[in-house]
Length: 561
Picture 1 (cartoon, rainbow, N blue to C red):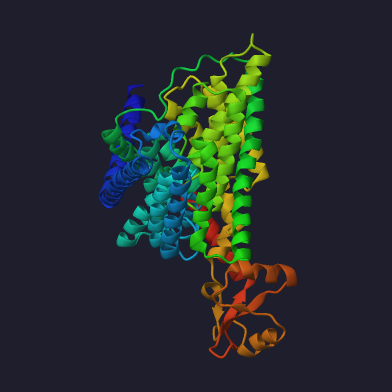
Picture 2 (picture 1 turned 30 degrees about the vertical axis):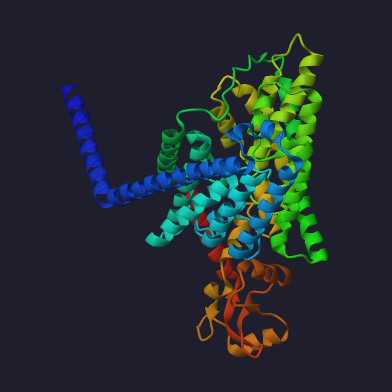
């Protein structure tokens, strides 16, 4: 007996010794690079957090200067007493400046935001456009300061992407490292912008990187904490909305009402997204028909916003005051519905006019108004079994925003951290789950992914849909002269039948040839200066499938590492 116990102890000691040796080996060979990466993540977190805080302070300062108010959180009430000419003039001139800035800094006059960061993470090794990003930040700053009816999270996220891109270029980061650093910057910016570190981490993973790889969690968390610390050093440890506890949920009995609210919020979010897309398409149609310069488009939108704001000043800017009124239950039923409709129209005009800004903060406001209106009706119909109608405003705020972002987890946590009230979790979770389940089936999963689909960037279906667009025929082909490649004469014969593909074309363009015509190889050509085509190799079906499989395997390895 004693001998067996001694044997077991010796085996355990030997195993522990081997594990320590392995741990020391990892620390010596891979520890320094890992620690170095975490320091880079920390530095990016501080920089992105500081940029987010500076962006917010810039908006507040410029808005106060333009409208002459000391507290921009109550801009709605202050603007009611301004002369109508100022309300009309400020957003119009702001739109004109925005149009000129975008005309000088972007090739297409379009503001870069969250959708472009998602595209950069998937297709550009975590890089985004720097020049266009800086121009978009300036344009969005002017838009939000001069009365544009949008939010600040879109510009902040892309601004963080510009910071991480600069770092990636300096250290020559590969795709995995570039995406991780992009996630760090986004998490820090969101955390600093909303004082929501948990939600910032999950937003970067759920919305931008679109996976929850374990290797990315630690550096992204470090960056998010750094961004939050920067924000709290400037603004203190305060929540975005300081509110009284809204009351208790009548468990079980009231849950079906929140399920119904979630479905209604899903439809509201669909109307919101469709309105923005319609406004963008209609604005492009009008611009092409009237042939006015693209830099004038934001000014026209600013004039329309100014006209609306004369009668509905609550549409100016992010709309925190109206959101607080909704969450406090201080609006009547008709007022809440009217404000939600007008804010939706104002957001569509702002985004369709390409003035800049994001959609998250307006979605919070519209959701709070929708939830309040629903709660006022529900509690009046069944007063004996209902809690306070303010609970519905909280749940609606999260439900609409989650459906628009396509991010139920991070949005739920953002609502918790914005309010500092964790007792309303059940109501918010139920409404969020129903709204996202409905809306994601009526659009391409989210507002951002639908934006990309409208640009023929197919990310909504996952890596299996977009990886083919990353692989070039010229990189996968077998060159002429290779023993495994067909001869030049065979290539020219196929070319005479109209079968060929450019060397710069992607496998996304090549695969239909194989599937439709059951071909086993396609000549790869380059275009001469005189317009002729010269064969340089052949793309084989088996090689294309192997390259696609390797890309899928690499993506899966990254997402599960």
